Image (cartoon, rainbow, N blue to C red; front, side, top):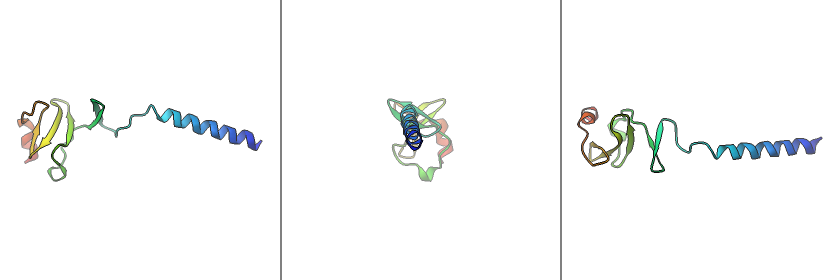
Length: 86
């Protein structure tokens, strides 16, 4: 009886490991762009931002924080977000 229990436990653990491979490797509230996990933009505080931080904005797409400014993918400053980082 013990052997059947051990075999059942082994099979269950194998199934759980194989199912985890299909899970998303990123955190919640993100989008994947070019195989990179980019978190959703939710007004991050200025003190935590570093150059190169990327976020996904519903209106502007992928935005990048650079030298105190929010830039779009074409390196244009996004004026609508400038107000929120002052």
